[in-house]
Each structure stands twice: as C-alpha cells, then as structure tokens.
Length: 241
Image 1 (cartoon, helix red, strand yellow):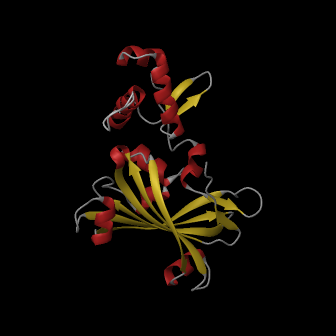
Image 2: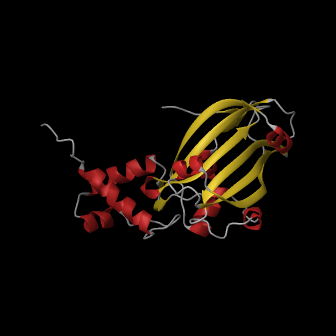
Image 3: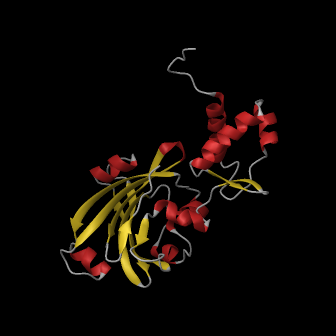
C-alpha cells in the first residue's frame, strides 16, 4: 500500500486532538486525564489507538504514566522534570543541592536577534532576566534570558526571588506557559567581565555557552536563554538513544 505525503496515522490524529486539549487548558499541568476507555469513547477509536497516542506523548514528556494511578499532564513542578532541561553532571558523585539566585529583571525593546528568535516585532517589549545557578553554594551557571513581555507582563525581580522550584515552574503556575521542548546550541567562549564577576572566576577563563530556545504548545518560541557554564568540577551531559 502506498501512502500519500498527507497520510497521518490515526493514533497521530488522536495525539493531535489530545494535544489540542492540553493547549486549550482543558487538562492543566498535574491533572489526571480521562482513562483510555473514556478517551476511546470520546474519540470513537480503539483503546489500542489511544494507548499508542499516549505512549508517544509520554515519550515526549507531555504526559506521565503513574502505575495504578493513571495518566497525568506533565508538570515542571515535578522534581524529576528539573533535569530534563538542565544537562549538567558533576565530575564526581551526584550534583550537590542547587539554588537559583536572580540578579536582574529589566524591561527592554527587542533587537533584531531577539525579535527573530522569539517571533516578535523589532522594538516589542521584552524582559531581560539575569541569574546565577549555584551548586553546593558555588556559582556554576550564569544565565541571560530574554522573554516577551506580552506573555509575562508583571514579571519582576521580587517574583523571581519568590520562586522556590524552577523558572519553568513559575512560568507554568503563574503565567500558564509550559515549556515542552527546547533547541540548544553549544560553543566555547571566554568569560567577559560580567560573567567573571557573576561566576566568581577570572576574566578570560574558558566557559561553555549553551544557547537555548524553548517552545510551548504550537511550537511557539517563548524563551531565548544564553547560559554560561563554568566546567570546574562539572560537565554537560546529553544521553543519546
């Protein structure tokens, strides 16, 4: 049987319908979704088709299966979600306790690069966030983060300092914006004056620059992040396969 380029398997069509319900807020992060039998009746397909759609969405970290409890919408409040977007490992042993130290949260106008990456107009209002991530009390990552002010209108430094989980958890719980995937690009750079001061290292020391664009539902870019990583005792780890 030869399929046309427009062919879309039935389970993928069901995945699209479930994704639409997530995007609309019918089922919010942390909510349990209807059972496979209920979804089967709702969409008029077999439970096997529903299961295949859910399996794929679970593999993409959009849904989470919990044995004996059901299937839930994935949430950044889940401690296990923290390391999905942070691929940092310690040279020896496990990562020590971490803390976020927000430094700045200012308003600006989008330049050409920010506008292109976030899909907004040049000159549109943005927030620029700078923070340090510390592990065991030692500053390891200095982040510069660019966000559209339309999505995060009241974001302030005080709000950032009050977040006890993660930045993505704050975006999800306060603003209803959930990050579902990210593209990253890595390169080697030297620490400038700001990075050196923030990471408590000498100017000119080598750093790993991790540039990330994060997306919410509908493949909409939400965040451009430039993370400067000090690799003294740490390394970037990405498991493939």
